[in-house]
Length: 157
Image (cartoon, rainbow, N blue to C red; front, side, top):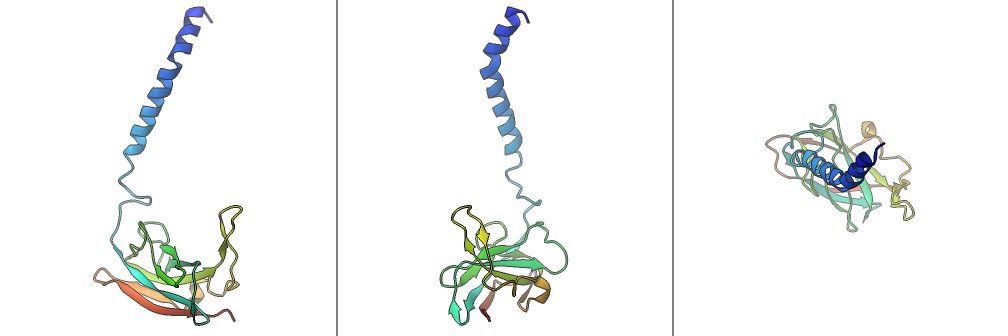
């Protein structure tokens, strides 16, 4: 390689880096307004309280599994209970609810592994993890008001 070409490549490195950053940010910014899974659909708030053996319990993972195929968002609305057992299901933003449809709720009572940050285990031993066996269902229609499921009492035995 001749010395002129080497000097040109060496001096254009910062410019090429800057140009690639600008191009990347331009391409990515074009997608920021559309949520993952496609255009945003209307959601209806769904909330309640989970108790375990009659006592409110925090850190229970709740998933709203769609009964008739995937949701329009291709994601499963979910949340964790607060320390007082209260929860509000989330699709896009905390507590915004679920899209129109029929759902079965599943519950998993694990804990955060402080080493890897993952939610692991299930003190219910899978008892409430299968949507086909779930006794907690919700039907959300376009005309639905916010849905309050009240108290959902789960058992460890």
